Length: 150
Image 1 (spheres, rainbow, N blue to C red):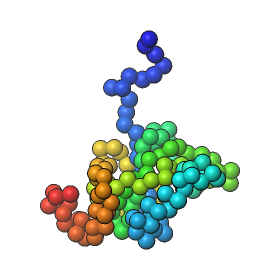
Image 2 (cartoon, rainbow, N blue to C red; image 1 turned 120 degrees about the vertical axis):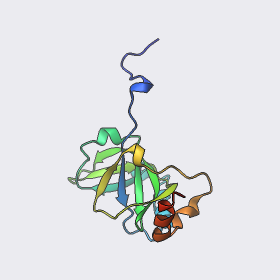
Image 3 (tube, rainbow, N blue to C red; image 1 turned 120 degrees about the horizontal axis):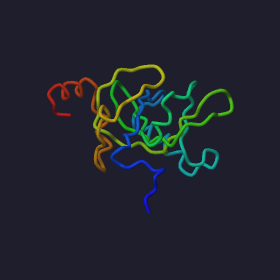
């Protein structure tokens, strides 16, 4: 039976992503540890939560997208976005799956808050076991990117 309420796959757009600085993270490993510490946490329902002042205007497009983490001037990984929720204190939670998926490092300037990131501009995931790749120094990564090697 055809469901006319569901959009057809070719008409659906890709989810929108966002970037954010990995504030207070010493390294991608400490960010990963913080995210994974929420697994099984009954208080958060097993999800990681970040607080932000305002809900993004395009928040509905971001469900199913990812938050791409910036550490030392490069995107190092992503966490899938579950959704957004009012935290009861006049702010919003960005609800994340408690995992860090390593991506091909991509140079990115630091910024305050978060920024939208279209799917076409997002770095690709690294394969299994490639977690150390995000440790490449930003300067070297920039040179490799200029050469077209990353």
